[in-house]
Length: 296
Image (cartoon, rainbow, N blue to C red; front, side, top):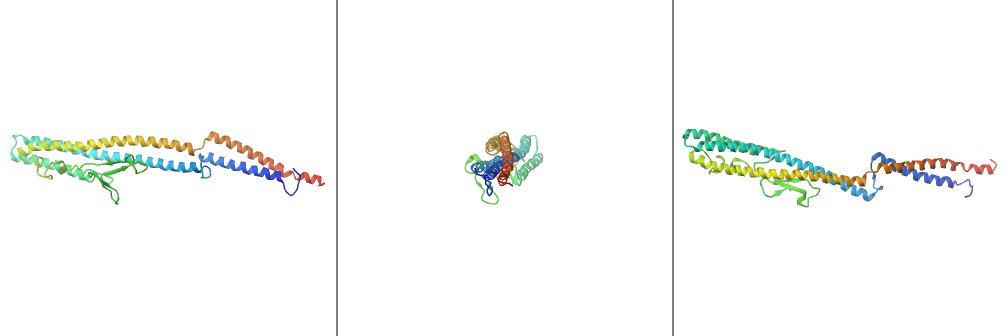
């Protein structure tokens, strides 16, 4: 290489190497400080796209867990109300049994029937008042077989969504809850006149015993259905948490920096940068040799 004054090619070469090493040192510093291997699309374009899709699915799955837990809370609310209705039905059967015997006169049966009708009215009140976040659970609003979510207010059975898409039955459940008013259960004078209408007569009280049995079975069917749904949702929560955990692990493999490997690279680039700085200082001083030849 010629000794020249106008161009210091050796310094230019060292400066280029310094720039390369310093750039890699900056990247390594950014990765170590952020904990991420991918901080911009230029780091790994394909990896970035995969990571963002995974992150969106992880967020959706975590929200799905919250959705399923909310549905469990809703089911528990309905089941708690049905438990109180159960107590009312048991009391109504006790009153019907009392009125069915011949040791009471008509006036006494009217008084017994008064409490019987009060229990029926309370059942209807509980069914109409039980709600979860403004959604009425036992008044028949959720008893329809179809679901329509196209309007501002969804109609029919309730759809609990927890999957990351909406293209299969694996992404959601439907919760259908039967009507639990006294008229729907067939007891009390709010229902169509039948076996459980009144216990003001001995014959009516005897017929009411069978009607109350049917009401208890209907109520138990609702509770059994809710219990099965709660078990499914609890299993769904476990599965969703496992999915989110595994997806998070996969996302970490793509996105997170391996600190031990990156620290090795950081030290390497730091040494190269320091070495290049030292050599640039030496290269910048080489043109002075030409001055010595010129007698400077």
